[in-house]
Length: 290
Image 1 (cartoon, one colour):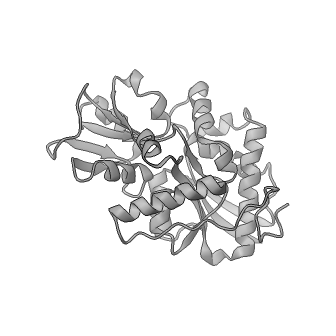
Image 2 (cartoon, rainbow, N blue to C red):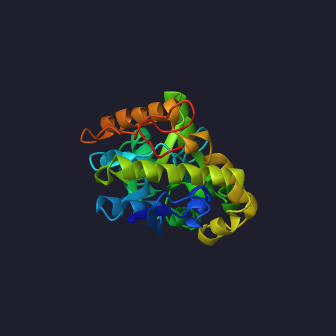
Image 3 (cartoon, rainbow, N blue to C red):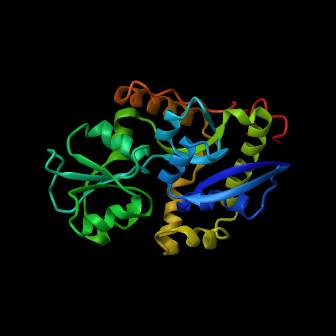
């Protein structure tokens, strides 16, 4: 039995989508999964160190790792109205110079890439764990912060101010849903194993959607925000048809993100998505997927 070292983020959308896999509510397809839960930037870092066979990653990191990893069609977070928010610690303040400090999630996160795209070399930038950003803004330790995850629903209650919805700006400029993160698998696993992993991931996402209340306890165990209403709002926003399968629209969005990332850093490589989805929902070339 082949062991798959799997990295999953602690975000509610991931613990929801992969609950079925974690609790073995779905068939593991003859594989043995060793699962580790980490912050998304920690997952990105470990992928650069080749620690995982399969892991959730920011799509910015996926672009940088495209020579080693391939994107799975299932398990992604992308959509409209899902992007990171640029927040400020004071009202009516905007990024204008290097005397200002902006806090961003890790350097390989898609949120950090968007800030670089839209505010290139405008402020000083410090990369911190996402959960530190809003508390530090509240304490006036920075001028701006790029907010992700549950903070999208709680920033007003924290007394912070919206400068710009970076996801909305992406949507306006590209007419595409914003691709935030997805499941990456090592090329070296080979097509047969990748097909089986993809089958498990897709079944797990579908299981969560069919049993939406069941993953709540799993989500609470890892979330920064424990209010069930906030957690389910998070799931409703980030787990959608593109999480089940990227499809043509999702693949187009990844191509656009790759193109724009090249404009920021010419060394980055185009993303590749594994296989092709057939009309019955199965993955072309995967004989084991029913």
